[in-house]
Image (cartoon, rainbow, N blue to C red; front, side, top):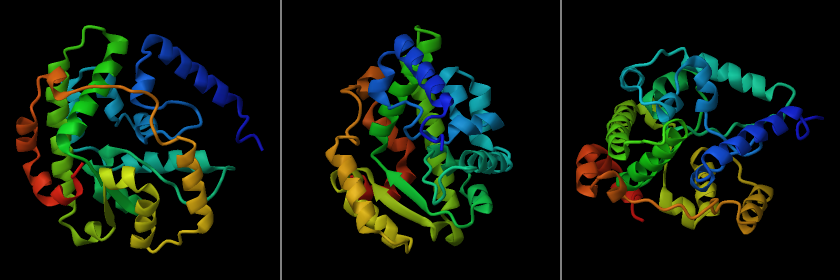
Length: 260
């Protein structure tokens, strides 16, 4: 009965308000709040296994460990966090998001064998510019003198490795069978139909009530972002050609999902 009135909601929103004062541009990049969706790394941090550590602080040694092989027990912590969050709360299917799951799909599926994996795709140069911008702004909270080209270089190194891991994992037919691929443009231009396709792919019922709720969400402008944040590859001394060369295998396989 306290699901919407728990005092921790207000305390969490106070912290978000403090972040807005320190880094007012962050809300233009990504929505934050106690009652909006958040990515899994907010509780994988409890396992000391999260890209948030590198997002706030430049720690190359941690970054190398993170992309080079992490302990499988991460998903025991992950599952306990979900169990705690769902205890005495709403029941049903979780919808979770965190790109670093691509580093260890086998471990994820060992813990959640009935998971339905949705792999969303966007042109790598756009992703690298977006991530570089977000991490530069995040590190700026701790240190205003951020070396943006250095941030971009580490972002490209990290996420090219992440996608290489995913490609390798998906060579396993038991993993591949549980993945539905979705293009960014498809999702943004035809969201309801895309979600309907995802449900069909996994054999899940897609109700009229669900469709109505999606349409109401979109009509209210809730999916349109929180600002007009702008960035470009030039801001980070990056080029599309250089990025594409690092993501060649990914581009070869998923080019049909990348048109924007």
